[in-house]
Image (cartoon, rainbow, N blue to C red; front, side, top):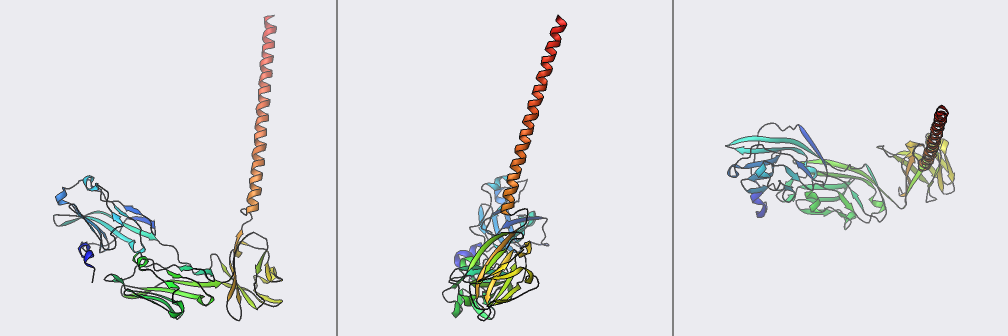
Length: 384
């Protein structure tokens, strides 16, 4: 049952006709945006009845001098102060949510007729859910997931997080259940669900937390998968920048047999680089001609732009990820050293051009002075 203090804001405001929009507005999740709606002829206050709708849902309504809010738009929507007197009914939405996306209509009701003043589409841009995340053991990580969940009265219908076939967390009708392995470490605050943010917070991460996580929720009475994220938990994380054609050392951090994998920055899946056991290694075709063992590290030579990404070292027997190295390879013309050289060369060129200009100006002045002196001498000879 809807709480008593919210009953008065659920006002029917139905519209007819297909939902389409010629204007598209874009806003980032959590931002603010104003949707324009203006009327040239301002009606008397007693005839004022303007309604903003998102699909079939009421957003805000001005009926004479009374403002009525939709149930999920209170405290984050407003109309211009004094706007009614000048026919400005533009809608401002703050703290935008994922579910705010859709076709908005600004309608005036007059003499039992609907007068459409504006119609436009709003797109709320949400952060892209990564296919892979990396976290150091013991640290906290947030697995992003967004979606508008069905609500039963004042409670969310159902949200579920799973790791493979293991239940991590489930929110059902206001009750939160956390799987035994994640007790005290996994959470999903209700206030974030209201904002269409159903991201999973996981604290004090352990090696056993590694795996593929799936986020799903009930929408229109059916489960929908919203995100799938491969979480890697490691003891060591390193960030490195390197120039095109240079070499790097990938620390192994263990004497046990390991498998090195690589996830490209713009790739959807990882590839096997090498398998190392004691002083022996077996590498893929793309790496065999440019890798060497250097004590407890693997040397990777002749770096190219395709080597930008994430290298992972996993123990073959335990499947534990012991090390992760993030590498960014600079192209030949934009690496830090090359940028410095280009800067110095530019200064030298500017200096040379400046010197040439000064010399040319000096020569021209001297030549002009000589012409003036010669003209004076010739004038004096004529007078004589």
